Image 1 (cartoon, rainbow, N blue to C red):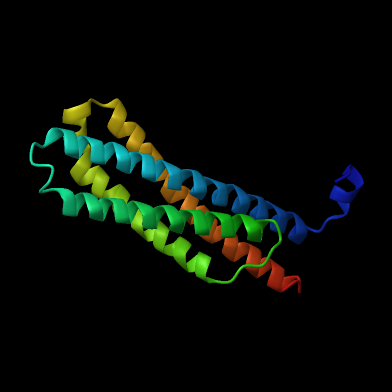
Image 2: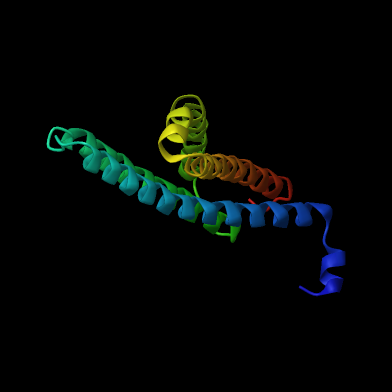
Length: 165
């Protein structure tokens, strides 16, 4: 875009572009956090299985954790890729936005749970660095999911106001 084209744009166009860029970034973050969640689950599984002698008795819990990780992976990838597509100008239906709200709600619960229940025990087991990094990533997931939802709503509202729907 040339300098002249930038000066001709209306404030609504600039806001729309800002929210679309934010939607693209948040969508990409969701995909990265999906990968992070799987890696974290693998590490947790390894810690559970190596610390217990009766690992056969833990198989139902391990199966549930693997299932939840796979569901989380596909959910975040779907939401992230859909958000990126909408940010790039391709229309998407509402399901990804609803799923984004669910991810944000689960992130709030996850951050609160980690803060009040897991954090003190993790500090005792691993020291201060690992729990702080884990908490920082979870808070970033929360921020990205909230940013994704807010940006998607703003994009849709601005496009509707501008008659581009």
